[in-house]
Length: 226
Ligand SMILES: C[S@@+](CC[C@H](N)C(=O)[O-])C[C@H]1O[C@@H](n2cnc3c(N)ncnc32)[C@H](O)[C@@H]1O
Image (cartoon, rainbow, N blue to C red; front, side):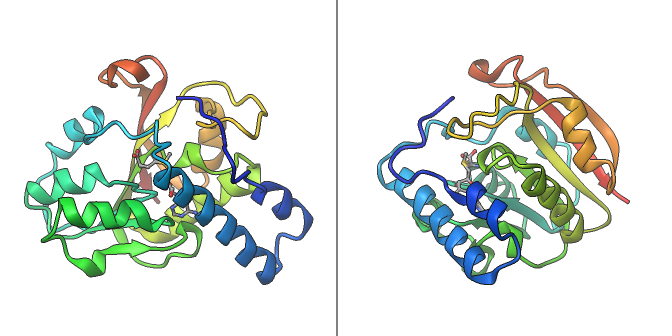
């Protein structure tokens, strides 16, 4: 699933190095990020989209008994996981993405899904309180700087209630330093370095039930917010 960046080169990492705190730069970064992803969807360059809810997550979801828990799926894209949960009676799922295109598509697939829980926005600015955050090819999608990765961990923690869970899949492939090739990988040690300041690790190991094209290259994790 290593992909070309295409026309909308992701300059966000460069900008963040120059002036990380400027709100103007933040706005420009958001727009570039949004345009980049929107263009990918419009041009059908969505090699990451497996067309259905991810098997390891389905196995996890099928064990959940509380169907009213507050679930957030950031960087949800076409939100197959949300459709799966909705069809099985989960009442409180929020889908978040920075690109409009997949959200519009999701609405056509799941027309009864509450519109107010389909949110167009930047994860890093999004506010709320959740019991569960689902990770599925979101972490690997944004520029793999220590600052952005640390911000992801910090923001997931802020969005979860104490005892809440961050659950999902992380790529177990080397982070090459090539800022133009997604997915951006990492190692157990690197991921834990970001997550352990906020989370207790319940599980974080090689995924045994990945889909075939990703077999051996995914870690399944369950992290509990302290
Ligand atoms: C690799 S795609 C994965 C989509 C989906 N999870 C899947 O597996 O099909 C990454 C997704 O994250 C979204 N995204 C990227 N940066 C984001 C941000 N800062 N806030 C919210 N969504 C973002 C993109 O629009 C895209 O839909």
